Image (cartoon, rainbow over all chains, first blue to last red; front, side, top):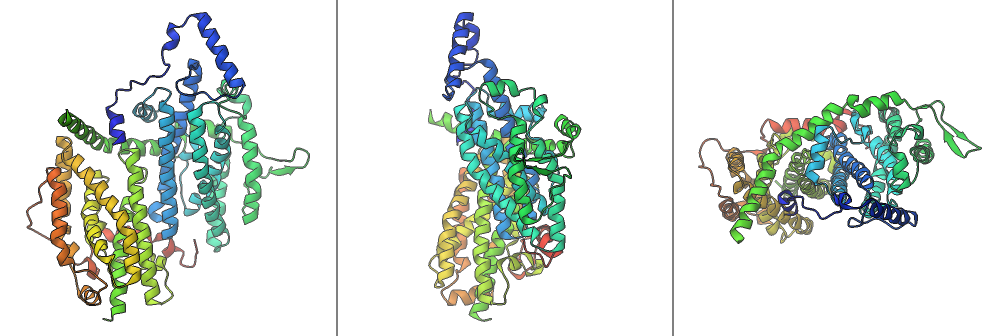
Length: 336
Length: 254
């Protein structure tokens, strides 16, 4: 079994970690210049290529955070699998949440090329050292929330990830390409749930609008702080890990989502939202950054619950992982 | 009972088994011991939902009362469900119990579909031919885990032994038959489960011997009656959860 090997492996990866300490200042400068030139000419960076330590660290932070988001993101939607209203909806939702697990796997694997084992990344998540997307700290209260998440949350993720598919780190970019294809399907199934609700009974329409009201603003927050207040953006943009600013991507999401909402009769819960003829974009109201700050720092409605759910799964599964490793070791020993 | 009514009942049995076991497996989504296993359990659940849909849809067509596959899954009460009681048993988020439950059921399911592939009823044989490919994977996947857990650590051996001991009382019932089976056997449509019991035991024993597990002593209470709609207390809760939306909003289309 693949993962057993991984459990048993002693994280002895042959990456460039630690090499910088042996380099002279001249050599380091030379390599950085070569690296910058590569980035400038659009050549992707691959795991065995030399890279500045800060690049590796920032990417690892971003990619592990992304992988954690996929995995924690399974929880709010998983909350409705056993209550899906038809067999077809249940199968689609189950497959979607399963896709998220798959995305988590791709991205963990891609992140491992930067020299950190998956189990270590998971430890960082569970200890609270690593973050995940704050959107998953909001509860799913009705079936319509499943529509809202697929449509808005996956929609926002697509805007982010389509750009990431062109980022400078090869393994990340390639993972994004594959993931985007599946996210497009998720986005459509979410929109379809909302469309069905909006042409359904009065109660269904109210359910859909309520989900829209609760998920709209948190979805906008998914793009992160405004450009004037985004601490990591500078370096990431220089290295072409980020290709557009948070505000640009947020605007792109709003511009494509508002007409979709209108098409099925959903109101956007923002009285300042208005199409601006001169900019050809939607103007929108002020995001509640205090709420964002609170949720990011652990004070959202479900932060504690999500971490408890992840920690419980990890703890309850420990004996299974140990058994698999022990069995695999026995088999290996009996072969020798 | 007419042949048609027997066939409807037979399809409902297969579909109920599949949908209830799928429900139990789907409870694991996001909570597996490792990401790979989360994916595998969802896969099994998805296969089972597909099987349930096929057999519910066929039952709905045969009865021709304007009911859909979803009406059959979401608008029948516990006493009308005809699944075997094994599949509705809770696992309390114990991975070994979940795997053991699926293993014991999948071994039967495999043998049953293998025979039903040659059913005189074309729809039954077609659905079975599709299902068997999936079920072979379920047997293999769960069997592999049982060996790993049985022959893993002392703790895992004890835990999987406990799961086996807890679930064994639901295995006799897997082979219970009634008038429905007699009619369909006579029509060349169904299977004689009594003929499968020994094969099932051999299959199960083979894996257990690799896993260093022993079959519990048969004694004490043996579950009975799932095919007559006599269930354990757990089914009512599964249905309360599963059927909530269609029941709460009877006019809604989702």
